[in-house]
Every structure is written in structure tokens, then in C-alpha cells.
Image (cartoon, rainbow, N blue to C red; front, side, top):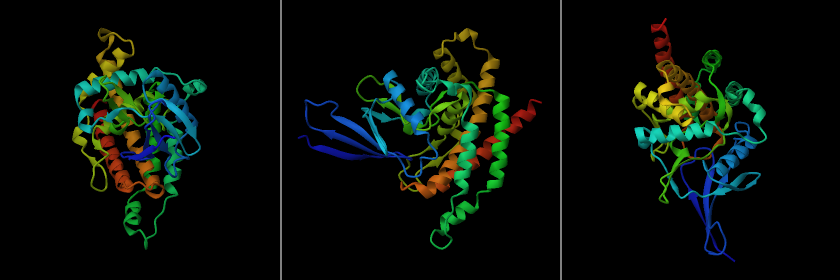
Length: 331
């Protein structure tokens, strides 16, 4: 009988990860990743979508293959790869690769859930995650710091901002595609086996939704480091948000990978995509702020979830102010 070696894999903010390997040369694979779903995530994640998305993308070579599922997690291919860093995310060549890979993802179909292309999920997700966040509470006596942090959140104001975001979604009319939803350095890996290929992992929030979500989330994440060793475990720097030129280069590479010829891509289209990304960057700030509030109570992972939520809300308001000023200047 083979002896198994189990080692923790660090870096996950929603799930607990372990690598499992054995020494029997006759049995393949010799190594796999076991993913244990995080506590309190069932109301936030559609597991049937996640399984369908991850399985389909593994078969297409965009992500890891799935070996099996169980009630509290799954076993998947262990990719001989490393996470890219937030610094790499900001490099033009890497952004070009990500744009091409994202175009491929957005062209994919999920067997069995094709009817969901007819509508988005973001509006209902924001509403549901707001309800989840509203149920979070901390004791003044036993957890004073988190009690004080949560008091800083104006939920009535957030509800109004979500309503405003929905009017912007309707105005922008972003196409509905298969979205990753959480495109950040921790979910982008580069092969270490010689191919140097990029992979997208962790499709747990994936669904058919507005294309702009992946644009906005990726651009926002270039400003965030989520694996800082010291507490609270993250660092933000809005100055790292992609410049207009970097965004246009990203969109151009995305459109070319989608089958367009560069000479057919107009300045007007690139400007529209830039506005699309801006709106959905604000949406992802709101979404991950609500996620952080909920996780601050549910998760056992050592991470400053409430501090993270407050920082995302600061980013939301900073970006909203810039967005509204830009719109006013064009009136």
C-alpha cells in the first residue's frame, strides 16, 4: 500500500487546500490537490456552476482537471505551477497573455447551463451578499475591534450605492459571457514544467455574467496584494491601477484574441470598454467588500476580512468620485 504525504497549500482566502502525493510509480496521478470548501460559503457560491465550470475548463486546458467531487470539497489536478505576483500582473507582456486567455474563457460554453446566457447574476448576487452581510454581528464585550469596524459600515448607504450601480449596468450593456469573477494573482498560475503557460484556477464564483466584471476585477486586483505575510494579510495601492494606455492595450489584445483584426478596432470601442471596466471595477469593490464582511464571521483563515472590506469600500468611493467627475466633464 502506498504511503500518502499531505501538505498544506497556503494562499487561499475562501478554501482550505492540501497537496496529497504518494510514492507508487505504477499509479497515476502521483499528486493531487484536495480542496476543502470554506465555512459559510454555501450561500455565496453556486456549487453546481463551480463544478460545471471547473470541469469544462479543465477539459479545455484553461484550468486544472477535476478527478472527483465530494460533499465538502473536491480532488483536482495538482498543477506544477506557481502563482504570478501582483508585480507580474502589472507587466505589459503578462497582461497581454491574460487578455488572450480571458478572451478564450469568455468564448467557452458550459454544457447543461446554456440557458443562463440570457441574463446576468450580478444584481441578485449583490442583493444576496448584502443580506448576508447584514446578518453579521460582533459582541462589544468579546470582540470589540471587529464590533467597532463593523459600526463603520453604513449599510443603508451601501444599499443606495448598489441601486445606483444597477442603473449603470443597464446603461453600459456589457455582453453576458462565461466569467471567472475572481481574476487575481492568487488565481492565475504559470507552469513551471517548461511550457511557461498561464492557467486560471478557482472558478468557484464563476457564472454567465457581464463581461466587464472580469475586466474591472482584474484591473482592481493589480492594485491589491492579497498574500502579505504580516496581518491583516493584504496591501492596497490605487496608484497601481492600470493607466488608460495599459487598459487600451489590454482590450486590443483581448479583441484580437476574440477574432478581431486590429485595424477594425476603433478608438470609440476602446473608450466604451474602458468605461465598461470602470463601472464593473466599482461593482467588484462593492461585491468583495460584502464578501469580506460575511467572511469576517464565518472564515477560520487568518486574514483581516473586515479591514479588507473597509478598504474595498474606500476604493469604491474613490473610483466612483473619479468616474462621476469624468462623466460630468464630457457632458
